[in-house]
Image (cartoon, rainbow, N blue to C red; front, side, top):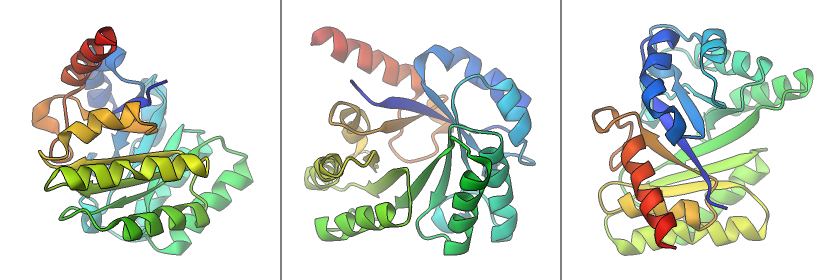
Length: 231
């Protein structure tokens, strides 16, 4: 069974986000709410207005996002998302361990079904396999429900190296999101879903791509339809 498709939604408020998602609602399984792109983090309103499983991300500048304030201010809306039983929250592996512990404690205290995605990005290269495997092991040790490893590809070898992580993750029954950014890595965003990847990310439309090489939701749906019918 192919993995999930998540649309990365950028909007100034929850109402605007709901309107923007409506045309692609049938093409995606999960909506990523990029809190770092909102005027203020309307977590409860997003949960009320958006009817897909929600993934809340509040990405800091130091990992390619738009949030530049205090780290405790950054984690607060993610804690709210856990209390409200959002499907997922995303936190960077490189974030201070105290932030991760707060999320894990909130999950336990509220018996929340929210799944914690620990994410790791390399916006310049694709490291060697030993480095990537080490990151995967770290995610499991730190209490992730799901891992996310995203690198930048410069050639086909980079793509194959990242996708080979899926076999490692499968062997230890660890759900993993992994693919490559950049034009060279574009194919991995599609292939990962058919190789055991937990999820791939698309944009509302190509002008709103949140990472290099990202497909639009409708383009991605067309590709999946062609591939599935051809098989």
